[in-house]
Length: 317
Image (cartoon, rainbow, N blue to C red):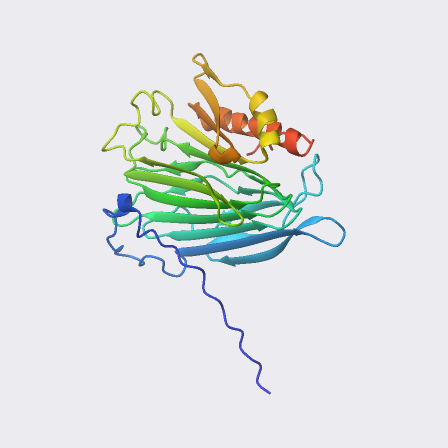
């Protein structure tokens, strides 16, 4: 009897055709075409509670160049929390790369997800790089998503769209850190990328919309150094916390908004509409202090929601 050949499922599509800001960058790359094998990365992570009450990575599917290995349990404050790092074997994002990441936490599951290194966006001459993320949190689940910074090089074109579907009883800590560019490369190339388009939107599990935030940075059309945008700052962190109104009130009251002109560091906090949670932003000159601020805010969130501290970051991170 012949063995039945297992069919390999295709990765879900990544479509940004509705994004008008990217319509200038639709030329097919002269090398590998848009979404070619190795340029269409896909990752699916599914966390759940096992029969012993431990949170585990139950579901994993990936397509090259995205890589995730076995979950780790190194958080001494929450030893039952799986810690997962997303890696890429393809180097920096280049012309025509399309990526999609689907992360689901089932009822009562909890997890920490990050990246192994900063996301580098290489110089692009023809097309752009795009990322779609779908994050789903079911009842009483908890996710900390804290990737390393995004570094756009000169003439980078990048777009991302993150859809968050979350239960009223779940908590999400979602952070993004964007560098202005390779600050110390040759003469420096801050804000010399072509376009950076970032959208995040949240909804309940039944589809009820909660919020939508989108910013499009086009340095050639509008200078990010203008007052009210980046000014003199070089690094920007955007943090979304979706949690219950009671938790959000406690986190808000425990978080300080400030401008430290001496150390060139600033932070602010506001509430998301529809009692969805909080929005926290940090500005700085270097990634280290900004990452420390984000991690400190995560500590506040975890203490309120879980009653545990966030451990000190590894010194090599």
